[in-house]
Image: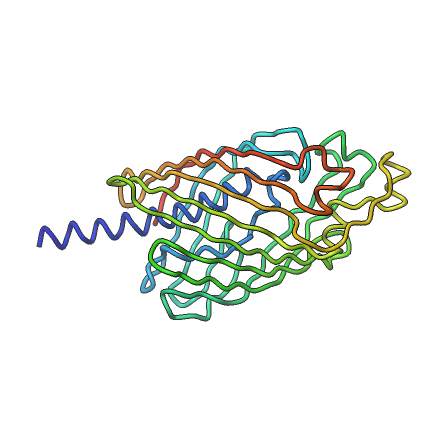
Length: 280
């Protein structure tokens, strides 16, 4: 009986730790994103959830990252998070958006979801003066995740609706690895890249002829291509089955036409995250 209780607690701790790694991966993406929200919703992170019961997590993270994609200025934010997963396939929250997982297999998840592009405010940086705002917009899309084993997960996501004309499309591809390195300690490693269509690139890295007049930048029309490459490492500690603290270090680099944009003052970026989460 004692052994069974210990196994139950160990499994609960593992689920909580993996769910926390998923949350910290999202937060790490926010930190390394030069615009703090550019990597939000880049994957649906359902791994670690108990398949036969409802559950969620709430957290608070201190994030230090860039002001916008390509910025050389930094800002620090305190960001709350809340996500919930139902056993019937539905999920909702700040990390995953709102959607439905059609798969009943533990090694695979796929479905549809609604997310958001948070836009970009001209007032965020003096280097955006004259560029105007990119308003927030709803995105529709789908996702597919595949677990190679208990520690290694491949992720993919397609999102449409971002940018000035609401025709921006993003294809996100990533991989996450997590492993226990000591009792109640878990190491997470992540890598991801994003392909953006020309409409998205124009909204966030392009300069129209009108913007060239108001901003002083040369007119620039980027094409579709890989927007960036992102890497992160995180360490999670579970104080109990429900409470954990986490830290993450992230690195990102803009690629192709995004890197060559007149708005890009620094193509490489680093980010830091410190967070606490509670699973329920």
